[in-house]
Amino acid sequence: MCLAVPGKVESIDEKSSPKMATVNFGGILKDVCIDFLPDIKTGEYIIVHAGYALEKINEEEAENQLQAFIEAEYLIRSRTK
Amino acid sequence: MKFLNEFRDINSIKILMEKFHISGLREMNLMEVCGSQTHAIMKYNIEELLPQEISLVHGPGCPVCVTSSEMIDKALYLAQMEKTILMTFGDMMRVPGSIQNMSALKSRGADIRIIYSPLDAVRTAQKEKDKNVILFAIGFETTAPANASAILAAAKLSLKNFYVLSAQVLIPPAVEYILSSENIRLDGLLAPGHVCSITGYRWCEKISEKYNIPITVTGFEPLDILEGIYITADNVIKNNHIAENQYRRIVKKDGNKNAREIIEKVFSVTGRTWRGLGFIPESGFVLNENYSRFDAEKIFNPVPEINNEDKDCIAGEILQGIKKPNDCPLFGEKCNPLHPVGAPMVSSEGACSAYFRYKRKKQEQKNNG
Image (cartoon, rainbow over all chains, first blue to last red; front, side):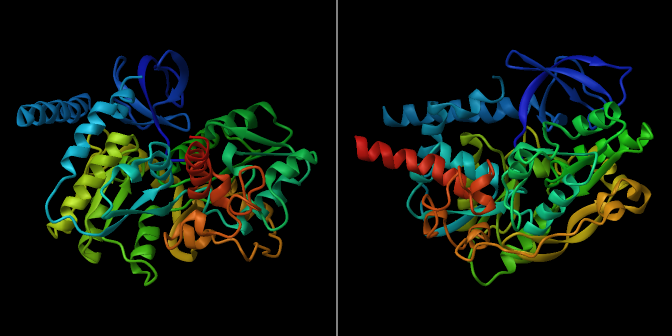
């Protein structure tokens, strides 16, 4: 039940109530309610649970986390040389 | 898929495993609270990647698993009313009630439908005006805003045929219940990332301080879980009884304020009986008086059957992390995904179904290899 999937906001239906967006999950488009993220914009990434967007994905934090692994890889390789 | 595949990358996982060569590592029990985390641990065989000093204990964070037999019986009662459609998430369908489950009742002709989103129930109520549409609302704080939003939508549409049977439960009281128990000794916790995306993690800081235990807000991909375990183990060794956030790309300290406002508008806190754990005060959500006209319990007064749970089923001990699924005499034999006895075998997040699905595969590979 805690499963939430990342997706990209393709378009927002400004006139809908509750407010809906079309979200792209790796090629599959679904309608998602964005009532909890009133400031979300097209092109941003969100996580979706039970048809609702829970939170925006902080792309910078995601990059930082992944970068930390790349840097660790660099350190380990230089250590073993 | 972006923001998914990168966190499953095998090279990154290998790098993180290097970090686990930390000095002073001692035997410790870490609990992952959320059922989805348990499944990822089983699926990606994470426990076998860890140093042997670290044991993982599976927590009660599976809202399907902890829904009481009594609550299932109430849903079955409602589904048998005339001109009624009961709607719920798919993995609720085979959770055992005292006598039967929803899947069995459906095959006998009851109109019980699976939904993906609580909004589906609102839309059904709009379309089928001559029927009572009842949303069997389960979930933790991750799902509560969605359930609340559906109720607000129904109110805005002035729907007269939409109702909610709330079986919603809250994570922090369950965590405190586990930590107060004398049956299990835990050294650290992985807090559920998506619950915290709504609630924030100040509650983790409070619990960490109260019980002198490190807690790490953790995500659900293998890289997230490994990093969460690493941070927790490191804090255990250093005696840092603090809460940290591993899942920084999603979780903020104060969570999602909009989602919480919607919850507070619709629900109030109530005591709940958790399957396997018993009654925990202030551990669930119920519709507040402003929305009681949608409360299926108040309107229809459903009557549960007499409780009849299999005496050999150890779901309670599994949900508290005291025993593992393969400790159960029924596991894999009398109790399996086709014929589940207890709720953790039914749910896609349950520890028993995870063990059956992923541990048995390993056993077969061993036998064939």
